[in-house]
Image 1 (cartoon, rainbow, N blue to C red):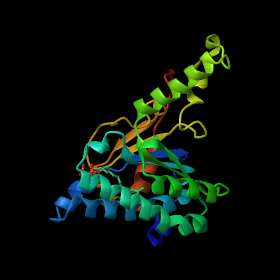
Image 2: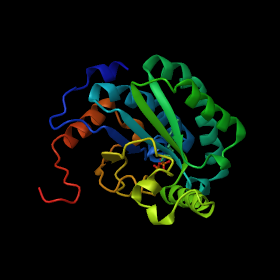
Image 3: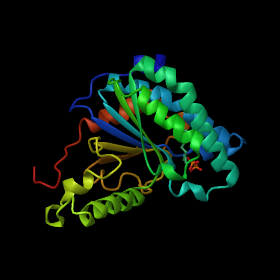
Image 4: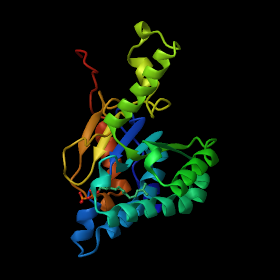
Length: 245
Ligand code: FPP
């Protein structure tokens, strides 16, 4: 919180309204310290709060973070169970802080595979924070971009076969309305930490025109100052959305 207060506030060409982050590098952060990977995830979870709290100062209205992908189930049972426990503790522990800081929390991803206790906590925090307006935090949990498009297509097809939608009228807006992100603006800036330059199935549809920043810092070391620098660099980029300037 204190760090967030000290960071620069002006972004020359305007702030990205929506920033999405692939929080990578927790495992390496722990390994470099000779610790189990879960210690890295715990350090990563602690880092989330400072970044969320930096958003209003930087003019960022929406923050979306990639916490667990549809592919992350392939990790060891110990790591998956550790992460699920961490998500449960994180939500319970942060509930009051979300209220204090005016954070509205949403989740995207397929909830069906998550355990019941975690799903209840997710529902609770979404309901409890639904009047907050200072920051919109979206947590991608059991999320995959392809899976999201497939789930959306399935529901769209159900509406078509039930006669609720005329297939001739289906366009990009129709499909976007079935995505988990239907109430969110598209991300202006996608950041990935830890030096890897991949999208890893994150917001595939939504990031069609997003700017990308690949940062070497490992997620647990990603400070509000580094966040402010990256957001500041966005301000000097020129976005053309396929047009000629
Ligand atoms: C990628 O690092 C990180 C994850 C798969 C989990 C992200 C989770 C957190 C940041 C912590 C909890 C988040 C919340 C919202 C409570 P990695 O393990 O792939 O790192 P590596 O590439 O160094 O192995």
